[in-house]
Image (cartoon, rainbow, N blue to C red; front, side, top):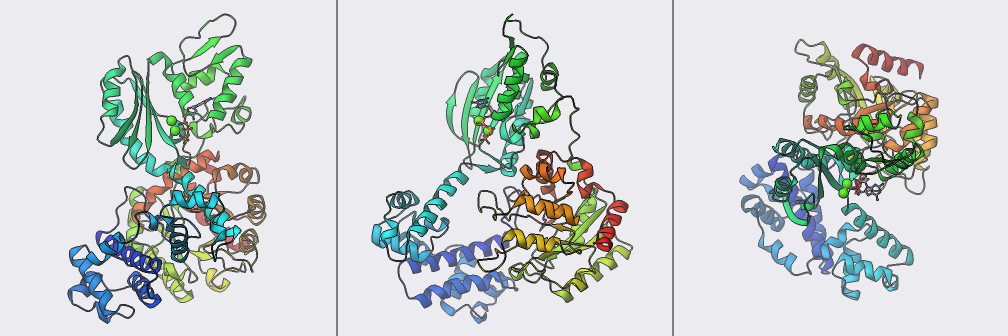
Length: 593
Ligand code: DGT
Ligand code: CA
Ligand code: CA
């Protein structure tokens, strides 16, 4: 399924309008249900929304030609409302309806387990209008007294509220990066600034960040503080001192800036890059050597001597007899011990990639055609591109059946043989793993592909085998090249499936299956914390953008960040291989099983 686009990537404008209308119809349905209206009326709006989602014809055209009420699933009254939204962009019926229920009530829909019926029940019986009130009621055990709510439901709702609070406090790395990058660039251009850097979790490339930490070196901080606190994107200045300021930016992200004199810069940069756990470890190493380390500098415990000439982080690590430790590895997971006496590891970088495997086209739920994808990938300089549309079980994503896949494979062969070919295309499929662990398409058809990505898209439910067994069953099929986004998590949105990562990694090692690093900024799955074990077992990664549009190839950057956090080196990532080597790799996997 395609995920909502992240900040900065444009959707087609008319699509957005249609999506907005779908959202409004759904909302009307929900409000009517909360108000206890006739269920048929409620259903009609929900059905109309579903119909619009699956509409093949252009909505604008249907409205202009007054044919909307002829579409099955859309009645006359609703067709009129949709037309009004298309032509005028507003609908008084909807505005009035929305005003007829307490503001904030619809926010309750964001809590897992809270549908229209339950919202109606808490509103009518407990007069609950907001998430805050709902939380309080759960804590006091009031919900379990209502009909249709048990103790379990109450616990689940409370957990959902707590998760949401935690989610809102953090931001995707990608979104934060897009905001921070232009700010640090502008900061560096100020005449008073000698050096400037983004520190904190953003520099460590954590999958989510709490706030932004900027650091600058300068001898005249005042104009820098002034500049920072008066940016147009600053909503509120929460603190402003001579060398420190904190602001809240549009979108809710907080940002701190510190300005330090040049001789402190390396220490401050290291300190504010963190992590806290890494800092604690480095400080203790420093103490063992007789020096106390802080954000201000190094000082000899006994002699009060201050070591000179530490102007870079590298010099600081040198002084402590360590190789330079890249920020991505500074997570307090024994990086000092692991790098003692060694060189800085050569972590993978985005320019090492020679192609990517997990990509969709218009044949399933992608927004770009096969040729557009091929052209964009060639422009990046890649040598190959794998096409892997969804399989038929993902009907909501318009997945391919056997025949459609065979046709696409032929289309790819024709492309590769054609004179205007710009890149080598590999024919693949993102094949659903069904609830019993079997694959959605027959082995006979899968064998026609150059590679197969096996993916879980729906939980197995109570009856089937657990998620771990399903994935392992799929990996035991010799036609499976790699597994996609193993936990199905959506950062800050949906918790991961409960997986036994160790078993999954062991099975990948035993079967020679590659594990994807899904680079969609909301997935970043498999998680970087598991790559240490996977590397020990010799499991290789494929960094895949999960692109549904040519713009999404850019996501590989986020995937590379995660690979770096997992200590991965280029040779451990299959898509750093050149065309010849990777073709051989895929062929061998297919024939050896
Ligand atoms: P975040 O913002 O929650 O995503 O994570 P960070 O790591 O950016 O944390 P933040 O913004 O609170 O602080 C930035 C860095 O400053 C942090 O990574 C390490 C350093 N730091 C902050 N507070 C402490 C502390 O109490 N002890 C030590 N050793 N370092 C700290
Ligand atoms: Ca931070
Ligand atoms: Ca901070």
